[in-house]
Image (cartoon, rainbow, N blue to C red; front, side, top):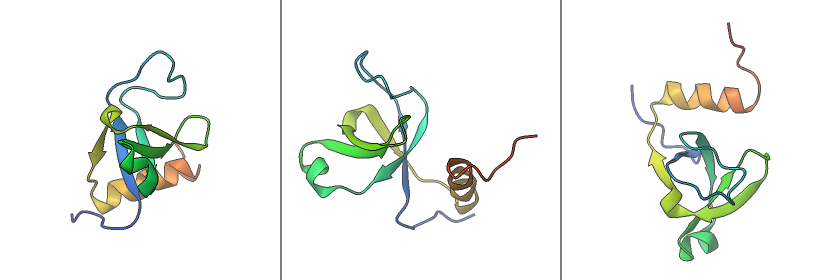
Length: 84
C-alpha cells in the first residue's frame, strides 16, 4: 500500500508535561497546518478537547500512514467507524 500524500497529517504524542492536560501519551492526533506555530517550534493539533491548539513540536513524532490506515483514523475521528 502506498503512503497517503493528502493534506491530513498525523502525529503521535511521545512526551507531555503535567500541565498539558489535554494530551495523552501514545495517542495519534491530527496535525493542523500553521506556519506561524512552526516558526515558534510548535505544531497545531486537534487535542482531546476537540479544539486545535499549539503545542511544542518536540512532544510529537510525525506519522506516515498507508492510505487504508489514514482512512480508518479519519473515520474514527468522525465517529463513523463502529467497534465489534
